[in-house]
Length: 114
Image (cartoon, rainbow, N blue to C red; front, side, top):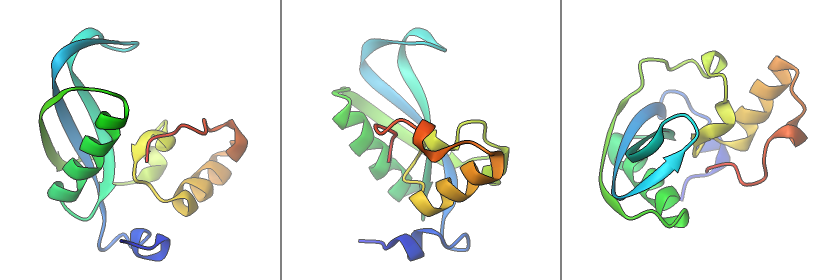
C-alpha cells in the first residue's frame, strides 16, 4: 500500500485519462444517457489507474465492461478545474491546490472519488 508521501512524488505518479465502458446505460449530467464515462486517476501506471477506476466504478454499482487508461495530456494539477474529481489524488496535494485557488477545503464533497 502506498503512503501519502509516496503518492505525492510526481516522479513516480502521473495523471491518467481513463475511458470506462459499461454494460449498462447510465445518465450523467454532462453526457446524458451513455454507456461510456471518462475519469482521471492519479497513479503510478496505466494498470494502477485502471485498478483505481475499476474500484471506484464498482463502488458506484456500475457494471464495467472494460477500461482503458492513457497518460492525460495535462499533467499540471493547477490546470484542472475540479482537481477533487481526480481519483486517488492525495489529500495533501488536493488541499494545497484548493488553498492556492482560495477554495475552502470543506467545500469539497466528502464523497469525492479516491
